[in-house]
Image (tube, rainbow over the protein chains, first blue to last red):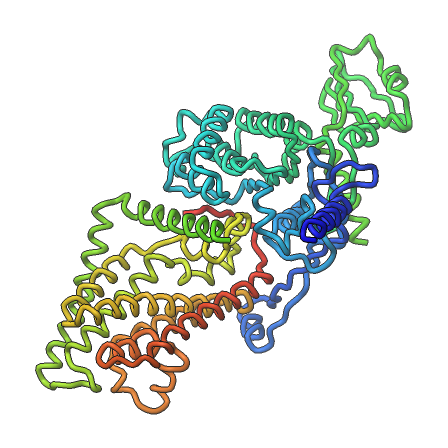
Length: 357
Length: 264
């Protein structure tokens, strides 16, 4: 009877897990979020001493809805950029998904586990890197830190040693693995932070501004390592960053949040396709000549013989726009897409206005 | 279950070891801190020697009992501050949102936070306390019991600080109240309970748990009382459970922060 009950329990458990983590088309979902909400209550104080006295006698609080009913899903092995301006609710969302904050409404599961209810169980399966918050002990060497993390994740000592060796080689930590963390450069420290978060082979890696403050060379190396993790171990990447380079070079999909709501959820390819209908044309003329005053062409900047134009290809073909410029006068010309940074900024502004109104 | 407990203990032990290793980085400062704390405590005991030359008994205590009282207080305070120093700065951690790194680890948040720091001068307190208990003229059985009371005292003191510190999840600026209450407890624990009467005596037994940390243990060591021993042990367990429950209840209100932070 025991065996039969065991079989039935397994079957039911399998069905529940399937319902929780599989999409309708059968693709495994690493993260599933439904109508997630978080409200913070903050104290309000009028300005000056009078305000301070009033705050003691009649304390006033106000509620700030940091996340307002956010829903989305992330497939296993997907690389997602979760971005938005400061105060948009992205860090609050990441903190709810990692079990740091309790949600006030809605539901979230990561690898089928509810972070609010089974935080410890989830912690074995996920890794976190917070660019602004150190998880490493600063007075210890990276090696001692990794041994400590091995103990935290219940990895046997021999296995910890093996993984430290493997990751140290891949992340090129050899030179400074025995130097106290406080003596490391920021780039070296971030690499160590990433290694510490990968020691237990997490299935989902949450990265909150991992390249903040790094120089371009180290940034590129960190991005390449994240891509490598995804490629080799199918690690799901959930990234928040203000650096467009991170988003462009790591992620295949982008979710933009503003004022606690999702304002765009699209693939990077689609985003570029839909929003890249504007081209930037930079021309250097042989002498100062009049530039075309046509609908669809906006003169962004003009200085002597140099000019910077924006061509809206939805209104005028790029070929037509170029024909309006006197070709015999052109000394040099450069046509480029609008930088992704500008596109994102436009979305922030436009959607921010919409949600505010 | 047993493996989980074993692993948790291993992590706590490593954490405490690393804390002490950090403090030992500067040998001179480390030794000075420990030595001066012993000397500082010893200088206060001189006052008691002088007082007992004037009177044979103060508040029902002789010099021997004062030594036991001081031994228990210093050793309990020392043990608590060596192992769980972070509990005493818990309100600051809560208010400035510094619990994040403990919350993403698959281990007890509470034990992780508690064992994340040490107070090196507390080693001096512990050594001083144990030395006093050794020279106070207790029997071997009495000395072993006194060591048990050092542990129960440290547990009760830590739980009391945890309980008050956890209020920071609900109230801001609670660190002042929490700090004052804990220091009040420690201060009262260095005076014989016989000098307190009425409301102050009630406070010391029922509001500030000084009675459970040192007064009952001193009485038990002078004249064994099984009921009193049971009360001390049960109180330490109940207060710890209550403090942990308040901490975890408050953790649901934890708001984190976006401040820059380093694990020092």
